[in-house]
Image (tube, rainbow, N blue to C red; front, side, top):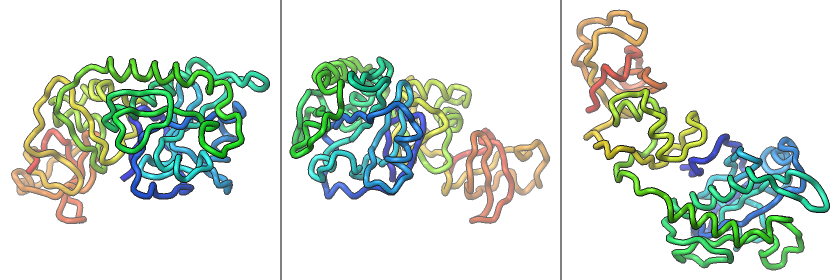
Length: 296
């Protein structure tokens, strides 16, 4: 399982991480990278050999997920602090001496802090470190981590209390949504999920909006999605590894199938949008439209 915020625009996976040693994120540690070049920070934190990584990277409206939230990123030079926090590297919009951050970067950071607090069940957000089990999500800067000789996160450090207050406002103003949820499975798409729950795959933007999903092409397996409009969950859903009865007569390309296939229950082998591959075990029978399948 790899958990990332639904706000991410891109995934930049890296192996530079450790387990959290039984701890659970209860804070955000804010970092600032000394530069504006996205390629250079990716080379340092994602692909390069340096012992440095991060859970998230922000530059303007762009948010990338790198180290899954289940794991401790190598960001702050402290196993104790990184193991109990989500770490976020933020791009500067200019250099020395001010090291400014764009309004878009700050807005993205605030939204990410609020989203983390919400998903971890916190009732409040405040500036300062918070211990395990606290109902408050804490926000600190890299320079607040003990024994760290650094100016990071530069000009953001003086604004952390304000950022926490803004994130708290977003947390408390979040609308109460329908209680129906769905856990993302391998092969799922927003179109297919909308078809299952809302009866029309073209209503996928409603699910995207309800879950603040930045990039509709990125669905993290095992993420729980809120289904809008109070739509009732079906008693069963079509998913890879499940079984479904074929009720149609033609394959996905419109070619007529053998008569025995109609009414037969198949294994679901793969799903790409409305196109579903069915068969027996790993042996493919046909690719059909999801509308012609009844979950079993």
